[in-house]
Length: 120
Image (cartoon, rainbow, N blue to C red; front, side, top):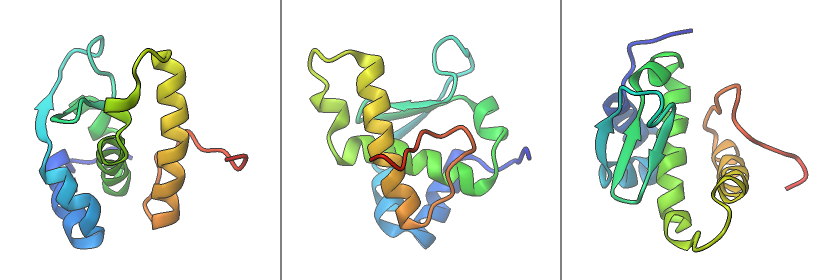
């Protein structure tokens, strides 16, 4: 279900529903990317939250909130600063598994294709 709900909207809703994630989301500068080859979904480097508006538009408002909180958590737990020489793909998958479980346990709605495992 596509929506007109935006990343700035998600930050506001997170402030109301999940103030910890909302406050941290306000610390990231927002940058849209319109080239799928650059950022097809969303990403962060600890200063910026990049997102593809086509990806965001394909989700419900609760899923957009999850994606924003997900990127915030990469910063909050230091993933963007601790990768060092690790394999980027494996590191991101491992970090996503840890983050997504935290967010689901907190009551956020994960997008259908999000990574989660009962093993961890």
